[in-house]
Length: 228
Image (cartoon, rainbow, N blue to C red; front, side, top):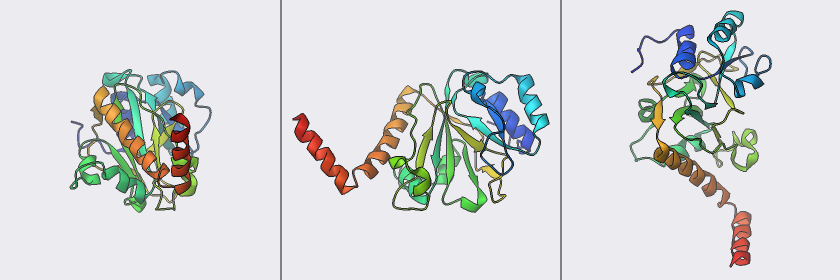
Protein backbone atom coordinates (compact mmCIF):
# COMPACT_ATOMS: atom_id res chain seq x y z
CA UNK A 1 0.00 0.00 0.00
CA UNK A 2 1.06 3.59 -0.58
CA UNK A 3 1.87 5.69 2.46
CA UNK A 4 -1.21 7.72 3.42
CA UNK A 5 1.07 10.68 4.17
CA UNK A 6 1.83 10.97 0.45
CA UNK A 7 -0.02 14.25 0.13
CA UNK A 8 2.24 17.09 -0.90
CA UNK A 9 2.62 18.12 -4.52
CA UNK A 10 6.18 16.92 -5.07
CA UNK A 11 5.47 13.54 -3.50
CA UNK A 12 2.47 12.95 -5.74
CA UNK A 13 4.45 13.74 -8.88
CA UNK A 14 7.34 11.57 -7.67
CA UNK A 15 4.91 8.73 -7.06
CA UNK A 16 3.53 8.94 -10.59
CA UNK A 17 7.01 9.16 -12.10
CA UNK A 18 9.03 6.72 -9.98
CA UNK A 19 6.50 4.26 -8.56
CA UNK A 20 4.05 4.05 -11.45
CA UNK A 21 6.76 4.68 -14.05
CA UNK A 22 4.77 7.17 -16.14
CA UNK A 23 6.17 9.91 -18.35
CA UNK A 24 5.09 13.32 -17.05
CA UNK A 25 4.90 16.70 -18.75
CA UNK A 26 4.12 20.24 -17.55
CA UNK A 27 1.09 22.17 -18.80
CA UNK A 28 0.15 25.80 -18.45
CA UNK A 29 -1.31 26.95 -15.12
CA UNK A 30 -4.99 25.95 -14.73
CA UNK A 31 -4.91 24.61 -18.27
CA UNK A 32 -4.56 21.39 -20.26
CA UNK A 33 -2.25 22.80 -22.93
CA UNK A 34 1.26 21.30 -22.72
CA UNK A 35 4.29 23.51 -22.34
CA UNK A 36 6.67 22.86 -25.22
CA UNK A 37 6.94 19.84 -27.49
CA UNK A 38 6.07 16.51 -25.89
CA UNK A 39 6.42 14.23 -28.92
CA UNK A 40 9.61 12.65 -27.55
CA UNK A 41 7.71 11.53 -24.42
CA UNK A 42 5.46 9.37 -26.60
CA UNK A 43 8.32 7.11 -27.67
CA UNK A 44 11.08 7.50 -25.09
CA UNK A 45 11.47 7.34 -21.34
CA UNK A 46 11.86 10.63 -19.51
CA UNK A 47 15.14 10.47 -17.57
CA UNK A 48 15.31 11.21 -13.86
CA UNK A 49 17.53 14.23 -14.59
CA UNK A 50 15.04 15.61 -17.10
CA UNK A 51 12.19 15.02 -14.71
CA UNK A 52 13.88 16.89 -11.86
CA UNK A 53 14.68 19.76 -14.24
CA UNK A 54 11.01 19.98 -15.30
CA UNK A 55 9.90 20.23 -11.67
CA UNK A 56 12.48 22.92 -10.99
CA UNK A 57 11.63 24.97 -14.08
CA UNK A 58 7.84 24.71 -13.75
CA UNK A 59 6.99 24.98 -10.04
CA UNK A 60 3.49 26.40 -10.59
CA UNK A 61 2.39 24.53 -13.69
CA UNK A 62 -0.28 21.94 -14.19
CA UNK A 63 0.93 18.41 -14.88
CA UNK A 64 -0.14 15.64 -17.22
CA UNK A 65 0.50 11.90 -17.44
CA UNK A 66 1.23 10.37 -20.83
CA UNK A 67 -0.90 7.25 -21.15
CA UNK A 68 0.11 3.99 -22.79
CA UNK A 69 3.50 2.39 -22.26
CA UNK A 70 5.00 2.47 -18.76
CA UNK A 71 8.72 3.13 -18.83
CA UNK A 72 10.21 2.32 -15.41
CA UNK A 73 9.57 0.76 -12.02
CA UNK A 74 7.61 -2.37 -11.10
CA UNK A 75 5.12 -1.91 -13.96
CA UNK A 76 7.71 -1.39 -16.71
CA UNK A 77 6.45 -2.43 -20.18
CA UNK A 78 2.85 -2.59 -18.99
CA UNK A 79 0.30 0.06 -20.01
CA UNK A 80 -1.39 2.95 -18.25
CA UNK A 81 -5.09 3.11 -19.18
CA UNK A 82 -7.30 5.95 -17.98
CA UNK A 83 -11.07 5.95 -18.40
CA UNK A 84 -12.16 9.57 -18.77
CA UNK A 85 -15.78 10.04 -17.68
CA UNK A 86 -16.95 13.55 -18.48
CA UNK A 87 -20.61 13.70 -17.46
CA UNK A 88 -23.05 12.04 -15.05
CA UNK A 89 -24.45 9.77 -17.76
CA UNK A 90 -20.98 8.34 -18.36
CA UNK A 91 -20.50 7.73 -14.64
CA UNK A 92 -23.92 6.05 -14.37
CA UNK A 93 -23.27 3.85 -17.41
CA UNK A 94 -19.86 2.81 -16.08
CA UNK A 95 -21.24 1.91 -12.65
CA UNK A 96 -24.17 0.00 -14.19
CA UNK A 97 -21.79 -2.77 -15.26
CA UNK A 98 -20.96 -3.63 -11.65
CA UNK A 99 -23.07 -4.92 -8.76
CA UNK A 100 -25.98 -2.76 -7.58
CA UNK A 101 -24.17 -1.60 -4.45
CA UNK A 102 -21.03 -0.46 -6.30
CA UNK A 103 -20.40 3.26 -5.97
CA UNK A 104 -17.56 5.50 -7.02
CA UNK A 105 -16.31 5.32 -3.45
CA UNK A 106 -16.09 1.54 -3.85
CA UNK A 107 -14.01 1.87 -7.01
CA UNK A 108 -11.84 4.57 -5.40
CA UNK A 109 -10.83 2.07 -2.71
CA UNK A 110 -9.61 -0.40 -5.35
CA UNK A 111 -7.77 1.82 -7.83
CA UNK A 112 -6.82 5.45 -8.41
CA UNK A 113 -9.78 7.74 -9.06
CA UNK A 114 -9.02 11.41 -9.72
CA UNK A 115 -11.63 14.17 -9.51
CA UNK A 116 -11.87 17.85 -8.65
CA UNK A 117 -14.31 19.10 -6.04
CA UNK A 118 -16.52 21.27 -8.25
CA UNK A 119 -17.54 18.33 -10.50
CA UNK A 120 -17.54 15.33 -8.14
CA UNK A 121 -20.84 13.99 -9.48
CA UNK A 122 -20.02 14.67 -13.13
CA UNK A 123 -16.41 13.87 -13.95
CA UNK A 124 -13.74 11.35 -13.05
CA UNK A 125 -10.53 9.73 -14.27
CA UNK A 126 -10.18 6.04 -13.41
CA UNK A 127 -6.68 4.57 -13.60
CA UNK A 128 -5.72 1.00 -14.52
CA UNK A 129 -2.47 -0.72 -15.38
CA UNK A 130 -2.89 -3.46 -17.97
CA UNK A 131 -0.56 -6.22 -19.10
CA UNK A 132 -1.75 -5.91 -22.69
CA UNK A 133 -2.86 -2.87 -24.73
CA UNK A 134 -6.51 -1.85 -24.69
CA UNK A 135 -8.50 -0.12 -27.43
CA UNK A 136 -8.13 3.66 -27.47
CA UNK A 137 -11.54 5.30 -27.85
CA UNK A 138 -12.52 8.88 -28.49
CA UNK A 139 -15.91 10.27 -27.54
CA UNK A 140 -19.08 8.52 -28.65
CA UNK A 141 -20.10 9.77 -32.12
CA UNK A 142 -16.75 11.63 -32.20
CA UNK A 143 -18.24 14.72 -30.57
CA UNK A 144 -17.15 14.35 -26.96
CA UNK A 145 -16.84 18.06 -26.23
CA UNK A 146 -20.28 18.75 -27.70
CA UNK A 147 -21.82 15.99 -25.63
CA UNK A 148 -20.51 16.94 -22.19
CA UNK A 149 -23.68 18.92 -21.43
CA UNK A 150 -26.02 16.36 -23.00
CA UNK A 151 -26.92 13.94 -20.23
CA UNK A 152 -28.58 11.61 -22.73
CA UNK A 153 -25.19 10.66 -24.18
CA UNK A 154 -22.36 9.35 -21.98
CA UNK A 155 -19.24 11.43 -22.52
CA UNK A 156 -16.50 8.84 -22.21
CA UNK A 157 -13.01 8.35 -23.60
CA UNK A 158 -10.44 5.60 -23.19
CA UNK A 159 -6.93 7.03 -23.09
CA UNK A 160 -4.61 4.10 -23.56
CA UNK A 161 -1.79 4.88 -25.95
CA UNK A 162 1.01 7.43 -26.06
CA UNK A 163 -0.97 9.86 -28.22
CA UNK A 164 -3.14 10.83 -25.25
CA UNK A 165 -2.59 12.35 -21.83
CA UNK A 166 -4.59 13.40 -18.77
CA UNK A 167 -4.18 16.21 -16.28
CA UNK A 168 -3.22 14.81 -12.88
CA UNK A 169 -2.71 15.96 -9.28
CA UNK A 170 -1.44 18.39 -8.10
CA UNK A 171 -2.92 20.41 -10.99
CA UNK A 172 -5.77 22.91 -10.76
CA UNK A 173 -8.91 22.98 -12.89
CA UNK A 174 -9.71 26.11 -14.88
CA UNK A 175 -11.87 27.21 -11.92
CA UNK A 176 -9.01 26.74 -9.46
CA UNK A 177 -10.14 23.47 -7.89
CA UNK A 178 -7.36 20.92 -7.26
CA UNK A 179 -7.29 17.55 -8.97
CA UNK A 180 -7.42 15.04 -6.10
CA UNK A 181 -6.91 11.31 -5.63
CA UNK A 182 -10.18 10.33 -3.98
CA UNK A 183 -9.20 7.07 -2.30
CA UNK A 184 -6.34 4.64 -2.63
CA UNK A 185 -3.12 5.68 -4.32
CA UNK A 186 -2.54 2.10 -5.45
CA UNK A 187 -3.44 1.38 -9.04
CA UNK A 188 -5.32 -1.79 -9.97
CA UNK A 189 -3.31 -4.17 -12.18
CA UNK A 190 -5.42 -6.01 -14.75
CA UNK A 191 -4.25 -9.27 -16.27
CA UNK A 192 -5.01 -10.14 -19.89
CA UNK A 193 -8.44 -11.59 -19.09
CA UNK A 194 -9.51 -8.63 -16.96
CA UNK A 195 -8.23 -6.23 -19.62
CA UNK A 196 -10.43 -7.88 -22.25
CA UNK A 197 -13.40 -7.66 -19.89
CA UNK A 198 -12.81 -3.92 -19.40
CA UNK A 199 -12.45 -3.42 -23.15
CA UNK A 200 -15.68 -5.35 -23.77
CA UNK A 201 -17.52 -3.38 -21.10
CA UNK A 202 -16.59 -0.05 -22.70
CA UNK A 203 -17.56 -1.44 -26.10
CA UNK A 204 -21.00 -2.33 -24.71
CA UNK A 205 -21.48 1.26 -23.54
CA UNK A 206 -20.57 2.56 -26.99
CA UNK A 207 -22.82 0.06 -28.76
CA UNK A 208 -25.73 0.79 -26.45
CA UNK A 209 -25.66 4.44 -27.47
CA UNK A 210 -24.91 3.71 -31.11
CA UNK A 211 -27.87 1.34 -31.49
CA UNK A 212 -30.19 3.67 -29.57
CA UNK A 213 -30.38 5.89 -32.67
CA UNK A 214 -33.26 4.69 -34.93
CA UNK A 215 -31.47 5.60 -38.15
CA UNK A 216 -28.42 3.63 -37.11
CA UNK A 217 -30.49 0.58 -36.21
CA UNK A 218 -31.99 0.78 -39.70
CA UNK A 219 -28.56 1.04 -41.29
CA UNK A 220 -27.36 -1.99 -39.33
CA UNK A 221 -30.47 -3.96 -40.33
CA UNK A 222 -29.80 -3.19 -43.99
CA UNK A 223 -26.22 -4.31 -43.57
CA UNK A 224 -27.38 -7.65 -42.18
CA UNK A 225 -29.63 -8.10 -45.24
CA UNK A 226 -26.70 -7.41 -47.55
CA UNK A 227 -24.50 -9.91 -45.69
CA UNK A 228 -27.09 -12.71 -45.60
